[in-house]
Image 1 (cartoon, one colour):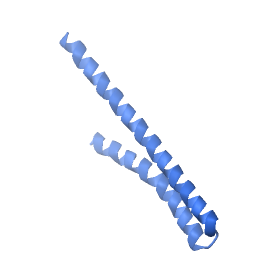
Image 2: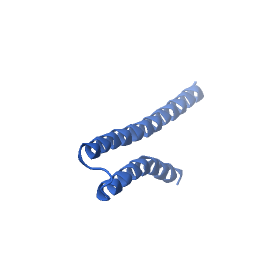
Image 3: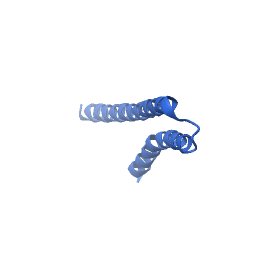
Image 4: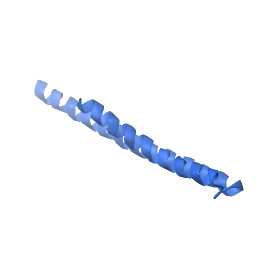
Length: 81
């Protein structure tokens, strides 16, 4: 059950920020608040920012899992000795 909660939390942290960024960009584009080269520039910036956010969260998640795995291996190693 804990694994499902952690995965759900991870998915929310990965999905929500890019969704918000692109929802705002879509709204600005549809309402014609942005157009032309400004629109392209903002979409590229939004894409880059969304990727940075997802990468940062994913990296933290991976590092945390690796640390937990190493700690578990060290604990098993110490118990065997």
